Image 1 (cartoon, each protein chain N blue to C red):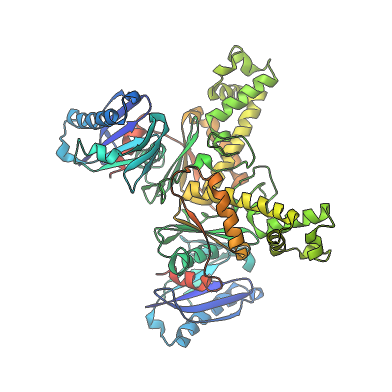
Image 2: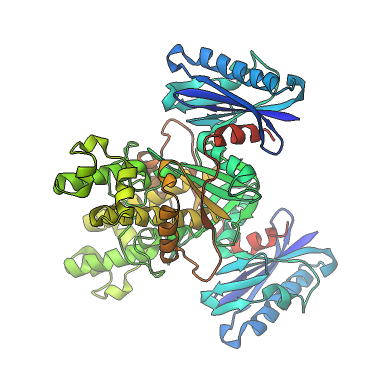
Length: 314
Length: 314
């Protein structure tokens, strides 16, 4: 048996035929075309998935399940996507729509959940019973695997780990609360702090790196300068790592997974980030003499969405 | 088949014979006598449990399992209790010790976990697949039930929810970190804030209630005065409820349980607390238009430890 895995993003739809071990047999992509409405996008999802199977040299009779990763949340009980902001979707009956094109069972879950599942099948947490995947991007997303299965809670709202409050009364979040973890542990946090630095210290190295245009500041600018020894950016990075470690220790206190996997844009800073976080963790872990989760970097990058989605139906 | 449930505290050991539905058939108690060392305490645990079965009119042949709730953590892989501060235990091989007295399988877990399991069998969360029990006492403890089973993570350190940081840089915790939730949501937090109030405002109603002795301040004093309309204590209580609600919303963001059950000393303030917390929750819940966990008060009190321990082996 094989599986179809589909990764739906705001810009493109990626679809692949995947075997039971998580190997991609064939993959291709098309633009999402969000403006066409969900009906047309879901038709493309189905057609792209079916075409991937044909091009892999297999037939739909061999497909056990279709899995779809979305940048939003899924209500598993109703088969409806209540929110999917990047796609502009609200109350989209994705399971019902997919039935127009195929009789194969369809599974849908959040993209961070899907990426975490992919890592637990083919990536750094392969073989682990429990893992937490943390995406450090524009926000902070979470993908929790327990007992080898994606965990999304009783109402599908679990693993909103980015909106765990770690600094009560702190920075205002897009969700309306103050002090959500993602205000401190996302790429956006490094960009905000970089801009503040430039406003306070217009002659700093970061300002020079972006040629005076603070709108060009990226998390990578700040991290690269920290790595190169710039004191201002090193201080921002140290503060970032502190907040990241505090939140990760909270995740250990609640989920106690075998592994925490760091993914998303900020994780591309690699060993520099990983070593800094690992060095801070012992300060925050509650039972210091007990083993607890190891912190690792994600291994799968672009293909995680396809592989993880395919594995939803395994 | 029946079960033995044992609740081990710093002062007393309570043991009961319990049926498969969580009904106590017979229960009795003896002093813990911690100073005698773990060997003598565990012998008493076994003997008290076996005697409870006999006095219930049953025989040990009918006992399927013995469950023990301890005020510490259990390493399920080794059968050893690494820490149990109230009993002064460190690396106690409880499973091996129990085997000296019985061949019946023995299960051991944290007392908050056990109390949560009891509520999910016979209490307010009965029949729920997932629940989080939160003890609001000297500290804040957690008991998580998922899929009807106690959840304790990969290394047995999950559900240390009291040491989730919610106010980074805030009050110093006994664990060495700053801003742990239990510094704000425990009875100890209300006592500390009450003492600070009296120091700043020696003519306040709280100071009068304890006749000028701030060491006598209890959480109940503060809550009772808040309930009676005292403005100073109402402000402390409102701040307490804010921090409680922030932490509960964090639990929803990670566990997304069906129910959150409030237990422990502070929960005895009943509907006054419950209504205040429920009123604040909508401010903090991430997906405001989606259903999420209901907040309830624990129903079982003294018997939760026996019932929940017994159900560990069900």
